[in-house]
Image (cartoon, rainbow, N blue to C red; front, side):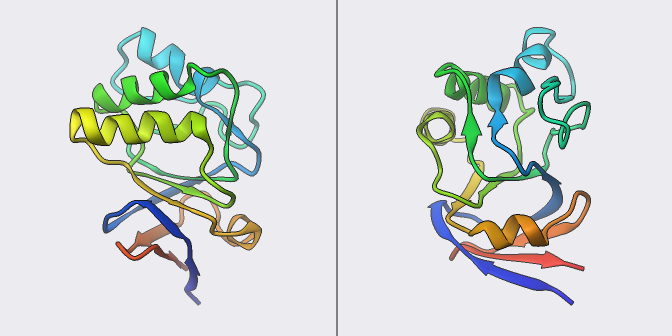
Length: 148
């Protein structure tokens, strides 16, 4: 059975894609920097402290997370991988989008005209319901459908 959640739209859009799920905060710098510096063709999560995502391909995925954590350079790193065409398709936050992620996502949208659909405030039940590999449908109004 499909599960439906409604969040607050930060950057709207309609898309469908594959979920990757972190039940702890995503450290953008630790996860993306190695791939960005190597100018890799794919982003493989390098954050050893995140067992949910470590060594998983994050390129073009819908990242489901509570929020991001870490250094204030996280927004710059996120903007860089988006500019390289290696960013996520969407970011779905159980909590409020934090300033680290918001900086990179909004600047990528404004400066690069490269939008990563962003929805926040989906609630802790969202992270309980979603699993890696599931198909997620996102609607412009902030509706998120987890397909079974």
